[in-house]
Length: 107
Length: 114
Image (cartoon, rainbow over all chains, first blue to last red):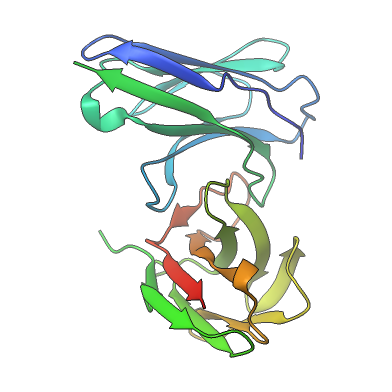
């Protein structure tokens, strides 16, 4: 699986958009970009995935660059409950969790 | 909606004992994954099964074995437990068919080895 690079931590004000970047310059053609999050020792939660095109669901939006070497997860209106570790994973099957980004949403 | 069920939720064992963790996937999901998360660490992939056959293998110790049964539930068997096996063990399941394989995780089993 391709390696990903994410900021160690980010802060966001409640109600504002949270934009979490991820670099995956070695991604191969059949690998998807997945985003998961983990809230304090709970099971990781699937957020969204994409291959080439930008994607949106009820939780978030995923913007993938044209060369697929980086992506951004957007939480449009962050709430305190969005405070978690966010993992960007490039994979075609099993998930290889890297360091992740600790997102802290503050009032 | 039904979720992944793991049992037990907490387990305390002594060194050199054995432990069995169980995972019941979401109905119609035929693929099961096991992950281990040590204290302060990120989850690490152990092993996966598709249609009762092992489909991929990660850094799973030889002391551990796993299988998937005809009803698609899976069991992770751990023998000769060591202190370093203390961790959260997550099971995830995914739908059959082509990628992408969105994985849905259970609440985990917290294993403490004393």
